[in-house]
Image 1 (tube, rainbow, N blue to C red):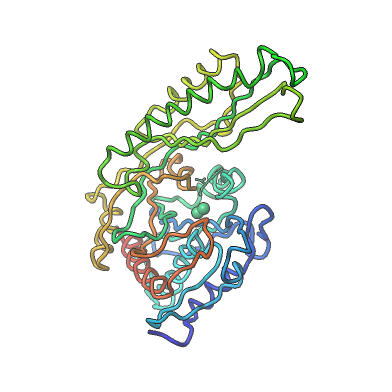
Image 2: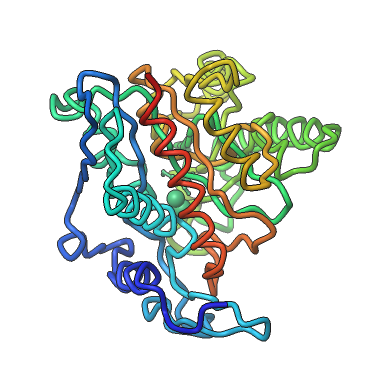
Length: 380
Ligand SMILES: CSCC[C@H](NC=O)C(=O)O
Ligand SMILES: [Zn+2]
Ligand SMILES: [Zn+2]
């Protein structure tokens, strides 16, 4: 086990110390968007993208054992080190692996065939409108002539890498009801909350159905989650004072529509439910297309991943990502995108307190990326 800190780890820690944390991320310290290029000998061939986001979610500082932006390197009993920081898993570890792998390849003096680009972008955690969604609409992005994208993944608790080839469609919905108001001591009829309750119950019934479906799937929730549509009531708003019947009441649901479902039809059923109860219905994200990348090992790019994982003793399973990542914007451009993090048997602490990465796993992941990038960029 290395005691002296490897330079790659020192650079990783420096990146973790940049406070790219919402709601006021310091993007200027790490630049709003960065695209690094490793030039290939035949730039006319389609390029390889290594995509990562630089922003991180907020912390509950008092719940952390170490400073979430200190990136402390803490030695464990077995000699390995934990690097503690917000974003260490989600997803500065991947961005750092991309960077270190490119550095290694460059320093080896080997010239690859295809161009490889590492893209560092902002705002993934808040929907990506000013990040990758905007980036893919530029001519600069088209000029990258991308043929394949390696995108976001998370360390796995189990002994298999999850390869995300699709994701659920983000479909936040807000229902708002208006009704009669008056003194809290009276039986006011036609109130906002009376209109809203059947809508809430209807959506919660859908939730029960999906949860029941999930429980019948055998693979376990971590793998199977993306097969069903997740629904959670996340905000309930209304009321100004205890003795005034509220004129307006609203409820927000975080909904993730599985690619196994027709998103447009699902949204229509919510619109109908709202209309039936005289309630307004507003979707926060308008996208209804949800492309899936086919992971087929007869495809040259996919087979590289398959071989590299085998070489490094990593079993993998192809699944639907339960959350939303920037890979969706790349897929919408018709570019195949797969998300993974080649780290297994590791705690999963994305968005959690005391997020950390094991140094040995970080160093190993760099080697996996060196192999994948070198082989992919040499496909003729
Ligand atoms: C409002 S966009 C949210 C994107 C986020 N992505 C990762 O956690 C997610 O909740 O899936
Ligand atoms: Zn992320
Ligand atoms: Zn995240």
